Image (tube, rainbow over all chains, first blue to last red; front, side, top):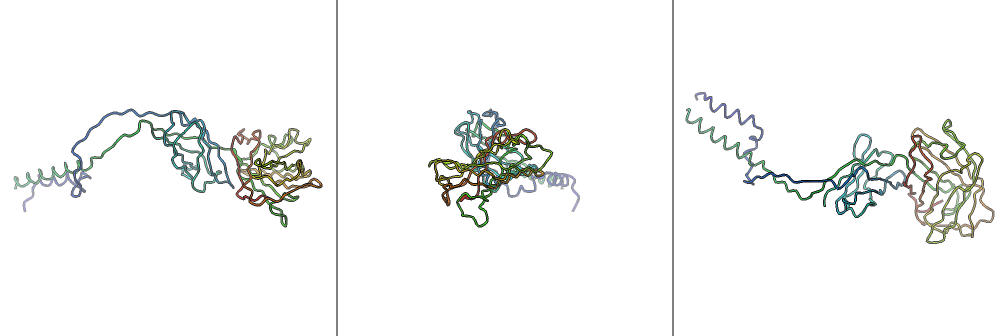
Length: 125
Length: 212
């Protein structure tokens, strides 16, 4: 068989493209693509919220969240407690914001002394 | 052979194109509001309260020798707890009266410091303990524990106050409460750690529902 430079170039190109390695099992599911801009805004300053908690033998059982921006009403709010290594040590299941203060139930066996800070996220409405 | 190579190249280019199409993803924006932020958690807070029965005592009844243990999450600035105490000592001891106050149901009985001392001119600022039920004090006025021992121990990161009730009023009318509910410690907001943080609105609750 004679050496073919063109075949070699094409084959090399296929190997160089990672996607080509799976091309055999990928089907085309969409023939239409579109892009656009959509404005997404915050419902307020979440970092201004306040946290007080109730502990039972050092375990955080509930959190009273205050100063929730009123514009967040109707949103789904989640809270994660992390330790000094930024590793999650407890969380709150998403709740629907119904006012400026909210009592949240903490899941897990979270030591209050181990908590360094928390992260809140709000989605919607 | 050149013609054959051209055919292979066309086929392979088609494969690449198909692969690219296969990676097309759909993304639907269903919300117009998104937000995330870090929120400060309490630093200084009541971390534990344990209401214990003395060895051989009556469970559910407030007696001399029963012990209440309070733990703060930080090293307490001792003068905020008792004006005469200093941070130069990690232990303090003081005999001071506590009282078992009547709560008429549905209000719960409470436990507070009621004694005065020259050492603690503004009082011993523990706060109050809601015992979770009425019925511990079945009399008509407070039951005092005049010579209650208050022992403070400041550790490397936390502070513990051990209160041993003593000097119970003569003729005190006391009831036994079983499974009345957890006790809740509401700390005095004056007490601060050594960075000036106070306990805010944080609470500590006992794990047991039968006290003493």
